[in-house]
Image 1 (spheres, helix red, strand yellow):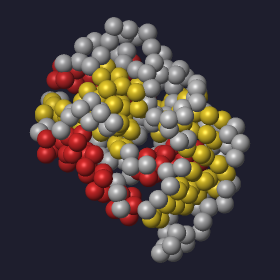
Image 2 (cartoon, one colour):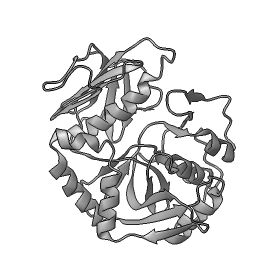
Image 3 (spheres, one colour):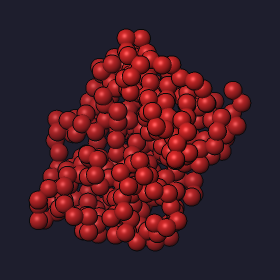
Length: 315
């Protein structure tokens, strides 16, 4: 395959047959890591042991995702993502599945640890927010960004455990997804960005500059929970609770059982739980108290103000 476009994401070189503007361009060849190859192709109807109508099919080293309206994806051996695009009203929508399911499957197949979270870079290191869909992960990093902290990754975070004593977080995709309420609270212009009609009304905001750092040492993990609390507060977590938080917020955790990588994954989770601090932020249901959320997190984790506050404009 002719690598028409070369990018990097999650610490991996990505060679694509088609343009993916949501990824950062690769500045130099990374010979130490095998590239991810992405190309158009007819994908299998089914994996062995599955019926063709099953939308998510997983075998060790093989991942098949089928969406009859937008795209079918086949990921194999941690090396290639084959993309079969369907004609639909939203011709660019398929790329979001490539960036999410596709690259997520690549990380799993390579035995790498991926969390369903969003990260910013603070003076102390990378801070990851995790939580259920709608908990406010993207809102949190967008708010921190507005206060001067660069965004590192949104939605998927690859945790590098090459040095177990100092885990690192790699930069992800060149975009952030916000719902309408969060975007309006953060005073972002919705008229000039793409709305994910198929993605529950979220809007895509591109990150227009290459991040200063392609990875950062992991400082802390903050779980997000919306409840009926009147006062926003953070509860520090002990090691077992950190382990459980990481398990619950593994990206694509449903794929691990069939891929027979659960044991390796739990080993990595246990290693990370031993080497990171974490807390659970309880916040009111409404999204309007964003400044209070930033203040609460910064105070609890002793994060200093960013010296370049207001000078970073990534979208």
